[in-house]
Structure formats: structure tokens, C-alpha cells
Length: 279
Ligand code: C2E
Ligand code: CA
Ligand code: CA
Ligand code: CA
Image 1 (cartoon, rainbow, N blue to C red):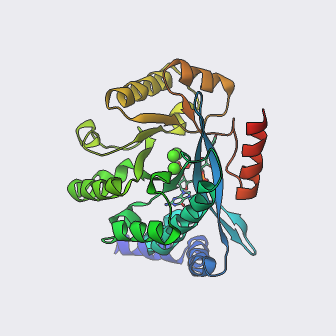
Image 2: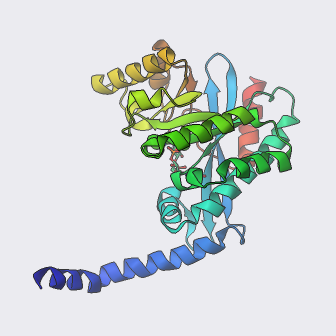
């Protein structure tokens, strides 16, 4: 009875009730967001110290008519819980491939890649490989331009099925990056079975890299691990020249972060790229 009473009080907590109603309203609106054209991809440049521009990661933005720009941190979890991430994720892939097609026809961009975040539910769809294949075919793009960012939590269960899917996508020419590397719980024995192209050092380790010896050690370890396993390594959240210098000195020459650019709309991205190629 005591427990039930506590639950009842919690359920009728007005603040909680309002939060629940707001959530429901937002979910209903998210349902319409694709059709209403409220979703947009922002592009954040990825740079190699010696090889130059590598491409960009696409980051989703929701422009709500009243709420304004909603952060993916606020709606991706909701989209995952409700299953809406399936159509949204498909829209992201389609838009990214559409952009890749544009880049394919611009000189000196043949090796550029677009990195796309894929959530667990999306990757676990039985026909995910077919969906990706279909999008590649209908946009007539070179699949090597596509890189999918997975997270460690996705490979905790059903590892064999995940690996099989990764191999199938690999065979199409698609690369994989392990996002937020070091923040999850995947074991090294599992990691080495995955057909990865790249590890992405999480920004939480990069932030204090020049002041916190523990973070510095973690980052050095990830870089060494990447070298041993023959993966590329990129650091996210690079904000200062000092961080960039530390990374470069320790063998990581690929970066993404505010030092170079925030995620920006495609027009701004193109301006950035042309201003960079002028110097
Ligand atoms: P993420 O994949 O780890 O993306 C990196 C986040 O760090 C982005 O936040 C980016 O704007 C931010 N960031 C980039 N450089 C810097 C920097 O130098 N300093 C700092 N402090 N932050 C930096 P954003 O755009 O708010 O995205 C948040 C998360 O939402 C992403 O984290 C990703 O997990 C998810 N997300 C975004 N777009 C998509 C999508 O299309 N599909 C899925 N499934 N998830 C997405
Ligand atoms: Ca990412
Ligand atoms: Ca990340
Ligand atoms: Ca992160």
C-alpha cells in the first residue's frame, strides 16, 4: 500500500504530468516533422592534418515552427523510444546520399566521405542492408563516399548478426566508424572482430587532454590501439590549437571540432570549404 501510495503521488505530481503532456505533444509534432520539411542536416567538416578535407559528419537539426531549433539530444532519444528513428534515419541517409551525389561532380572531392550517425534500432532493422543499398542505387552514388557511425552499445548483443550486417555493407563499399569510442563497454575481443575503418575518440577525453594526465593517457592508448588494429583514428570536440598539437604529436592527424567549424547548413559549409581552398 505504501509503495502504491508513493506511485500514486508520483503519477499525479503536476510537474511530472506537465512533462508527460509536453513529451506527448512533442512526439506528435515529431511525427509530422519530416512531411513538414522541418528536418535539416548540418555539416561539420572533418580534416586530416596532412591530407586536407576528408568530408563531413552530418548532424540532424529540427526546426520547429514555435520551439525553434530543437537539439538532437532532446529529440533523438524520443525518436528512438517511439520507433520514429526508423523513418527519420532513412530520411537522414537519403539526404546525405543526395549531397554525396552533388559532391561527386565537383573536382577534387572524389575521396570525400559523409559520416552518418546510425542508431541501434535503425541498424537492427532486418532489411537495413537492403534499405541502404536501395538508397545508394536510387541516388547512383559511389558507396565509398558513405561512412556509418555506430556506437559501442550497439554491438553488445547479437554480435554475430551485427558483424554479418557490417560485412554485407562493407562489401557494398561502405565504411564504419566507432563513435564515442572509449565511453561504452565493448570488449577488445569483440572490437577486433568488427570490420571497422575508424575509431572516433570521444570529446569527453579530448576536452582536458592538455591538462589532465588521465585523459592524455586514455587518448594515447586509443591512438596506439587504432594503430595496432590498423584503424584510422579521428578526434571529435577539438576546440584549441593545443589539443590539435597534442593529438598530432601523439599520432592522431584527423580532427573534427569547433576549432575548424561548428556544424553548419550546407550553404555555409560550401563557403567554409571554398575559403579554405583559397589559402
Ligand atoms: P555525436 O554523434 O557524438 O556528435 C557530436 C556532437 O558534438 C554534436 O552535437 C556536435 O555538434 C558536437 N560537437 C562537435 N564539435 C564540437 C566541439 O568542438 N566542442 C563541443 N563541445 N561539441 C562539439 P549535436 O549536433 O548536438 O548532436 C548530438 C548527438 O545527437 C550526436 O552526438 C548523435 O549521437 C545524435 N545525432 C545527431 N544527428 C543524428 C542523426 O542523424 N541520427 C542519429 N541516430 N543520431 C544523431
Ligand atoms: Ca557521431
Ligand atoms: Ca561522437
Ligand atoms: Ca560524443
